[in-house]
Amino acid sequence: MDCLTRFSIIALFFCFSCEEQATQKYEWKTIEVTATAYNSLVYQTDSDPYLTAFGDSLTPGLKCIAVSRDLLRLGLKHNTPVVIEGLDHLYLVKDKMHSRWQNKIDIYMGNNVKAAKLWGRKKVTLKYQVPLLE
Image (spheres, rainbow, N blue to C red):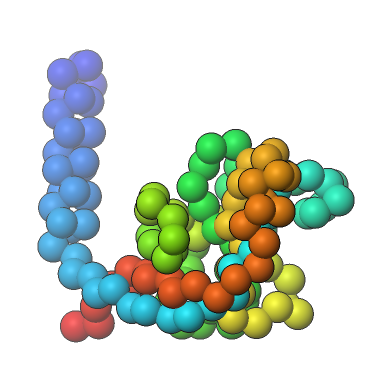
């Protein structure tokens, strides 16, 4: 198979993939949760503080959160986009917390312990995107 044929097949695949995603419909749900912050430090996580429970690699500056496992059942699954009251960016669910936590998120703040402590612990409104069931 020549290079042009391979390129055409790959381009066709991406066109169908993008079209399928574009037709998927979503809705935004709202929930009130307790929000804390965490860092990529062994004493706050485990022996590999840059690896999430979903298997993603974390890098400082990444806008992501960890969710308590009860929130997974509400639709806050891996890579779900979320908007957190009081913060400007769109975040993604990239990690999950120990099962002892309920109705809680942890905002990833890289290695900035000062920012995590400044955030503290607060109740926030969380908006998250879920696919519509048809």
